[in-house]
Amino acid sequence: MTVETHTMEGSLHKAMVAWQERHFRDYRYLVERWSRFYVNEPFRLVSKLAPLKEETIEVGEKKGRARFRQAREMDEETLARCRSIIRAQASTELGSIQQHRESLHKAADERLQFDVLRVMAEEYRHGYQMMYLLASDDWGANVAQETIDEILSMETGSHVLDAFNVYFDSFVDNIVFAAVIDRVGKYQLSMQRVFAYAPMAQSMMPMLVEEAFHLTTGVEPLKRWVRDAALDRGNISIESIQRHLNKWIPRGLEMFGDERGGETNVRLGLKDLTNAEAIERYHHECQEEVVDVLNIEIVRAKKGARVPREQALETARRILETGETVDDVGPGELLLLPPKNFFRRRGVHAFEMCDFDGRAFGSLDDYLSTLRRSLPEAYVSGKDVSTYIENLRKHHGGVRIQEGRLPFYG
Image (cartoon, rainbow, N blue to C red):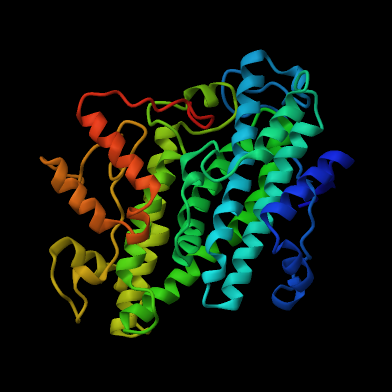
């Protein structure tokens, strides 16, 4: 894949560097020691544009027409939606850096800490990529500058999407976030490969290549942690990992937008899946590529590494379906995927009170008691959960909670 590289003009490039010096001070440490851990090309802060898969628009009402090469070629609706998606994408990239930095120092493993630093650097480049798209085209009077200034001023708590306003309490957050929230990023980038605005479509493949490392940074440590926990080693329990999955997967589901939306993005040729289609596929992938993978590791740790993966997965599924204990592995030692209506605050399942089987609680107090036992203790005592509970009480008291309209929502 031949990739073009570009940099922004002086003042905007300097603004990104100034943001890094405020919010990502370990960046220089990463760049200087890159070759200590990685043999691939050293990190560079540039925009990368790959060749288009198709020269024409691939989906929607303009399918078959030439892709838009410049912002001024788009109609008003497409322009506004495109600009909004780029803004949201940039916010998520820089927002994740601000989250990761809070608990990066809590890593017990130097290599793993360095891998998370690399994830942060690549998210920084992705944010730079989105800024480049705004800065290198004419989006209207002062639109690019104002949007860039807005994004660079955001802190945790003011980002576009909820998942990037949640604080990290432990290094388990860093890893589970990479495994499940970066997986949403993979889906968003994959859906946007069809993007009708050519420079955005050209940005997706280089970002996807880097996103693959982020998923590995999440899943591989989780595999080691559950193996150790199954053998009564290490300091991270399976229960802790479950609680963090419960914290992050609902936020990941909401990043796709309301299940009833997304048609506009498909109609305009900006994505190739509606929100409901993407949510269904993402939730299924979290089962197969995260929960099932980890349960296989738990069973094999207990029964022996020579047990074929397919057999280990079959054993795990039988344990969870029947509640039986098989070869000293009980259902309480395996992980579960939170259902799509668990701990939601947006979309069709907003403020439903359900258990892990998706069944509704009859009592608000019973639900809250179960919820507190299902989430990380430090998280339960924080602002995000207290705000959720406050809005939950209002919702069940008949008060309509204003969700707002987020840019990824269709």
